[in-house]
Amino acid sequence: MKKMILHIGHGKTGSSAIQSFLSLNADQLMRLGLIFPMDEETDYSKEGRISSGNYKILLNETIEFPADKTIIFSGEHLFFELLDEDVFSKKVIKKIDRLTVILYTRNIMEFLHSYFDQSIKRDGNTDTIDNFLLHSNNKIHELIFDWIKMSKKYDFKLVIKNYSNYKENILDSFLGLLKHYTSKEIPPIDKFKMPNRIKVNRSLDNIERQNIIVLNNLYPRFASKISDLWVEEFSNRKSEITKVQIETFEILYKHYEPLIIKLNKILD
Image (cartoon, rainbow, N blue to C red):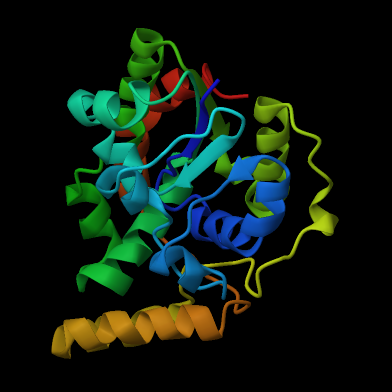
């Protein structure tokens, strides 16, 4: 039986740390019957640096799926790419017999703060958090329900976890899911190699945030390189959230409250 584990993120839920762990331990996982295909991107992630996982191998290459092992792919891009049912059917469903999809989500306000930071680090944003959040059109939590529909239509196991409850031990959580859903005799986390940086692509502190915004006003492309360097080289630096106005919070709460209630019904 050909089996696959897909870890699809979503964004800002510790994916880079998971990918670093998988890359570092690919050989050990192989001996346990778990294949994590490697490429240049995943080899780079061994150092605990920001990565996008091995999703490109799944989408862009011809892969042989061994019948006696479980193949693992990880990438936040898969959260969006595989909602295209033609791609999902061609690249996944038609190639395997059993599929488990692991999806971490995150408390919405916590996610929005991290999403704001990412826009500063990568997208050249110079706006205030209030303006940014009030005018952003992020649909990521709504798309979770598209994945639920997909799981019912194609009859695969969809595992949804709240990253906010596991962010301090995300690797333990992920390894536990691998053990449970592959039925493999996987050893405890301390028997594996650990990434140099457990916190990968962390949020900024207030001083870093202010400096990156200044750079975004002057040289946005340069600013993104500086921000990556900062969060990688000073991964243990404590992040700080940006406060929003109470009026902004009330508007956001009113907007997201129905979605929060709906999500809580499907989360552990």
